[in-house]
Image (cartoon, rainbow, N blue to C red; front, side, top):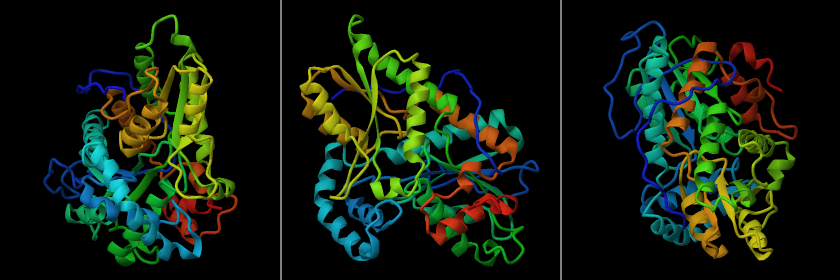
Length: 420
């Protein structure tokens, strides 16, 4: 397994431009390690405070949380579509897989580090935002996971307790930590957020009555080619390439690995494969196409057809052909978790049995990456966007009324008519 270097705190780094479309702002603390006192909506300037809510899949922090995590994951038809048998098969599959997955989490230290990194990234981003966008300060960090603590409903309850909504209004930005949009990931998290808004803010969230006292949401829903994201990936790749002899360096194969999708989701028109490919191309452009590269896919579950080629098969095949210098690049993840620490490090790399197969560092606490997050959020807040134009366009094969209504809600009054 490639050694991971310890991380140091941010230094002065580039601040690239960013993109998104309809917006707002927010504030407050989430179930973070560092507690923040409640802030009322009139405690600062006219546009603050602003709640910044990181959306992600999450992961169990301890092995005891694995079964609940898997139960929620396999119950989600957006992520793992099991059809009309979802409610029966989901609990059955999760229960059977729990012992195996518990052992995997035990092998990487007893739990996922994704909460630690998400809370750190959000907190550090908010510190930068307070400096570069003071008109919407203070910015308060929150994390909402889809399948693990802190869950979306826990985050939303915390927002209300901290003085948002409940007739007081306030701005909140749902910031997807999936750089590339998929209905299975960002879409699922937004469906969950929309559900809990309706449940916890009552009629204020229904659109039929005065909404002035409800939390005003906007979404940063995708950012696959943001310059700061690209720069962060490129630097980590360059650092790993430096570990190879100079005369071999340009021949090292870069294998970009992203979480796969069921082909039923891909064939429905999900934009994720194209957006992941866009990230890969942007990173290679930044590297001046210095190395041969391929995009492959990992984490297939079950017997159904998934998007390929699979990462593990790709590595094995190249090693058999004599190509033993390979750098794996987790291109769709913003921090380490089981897919990097176990699947790539302990399965793919160890099975390759070649010292030339290594992995680029994950983004984790990268100052370049955290600056990119702040730049993205700043531009979103300054533009006053609600969401991206891309988010208003549903998949060609989408038949979900929930998806339709969720997109209309987050697009706002002006954008709702664009949702098709």
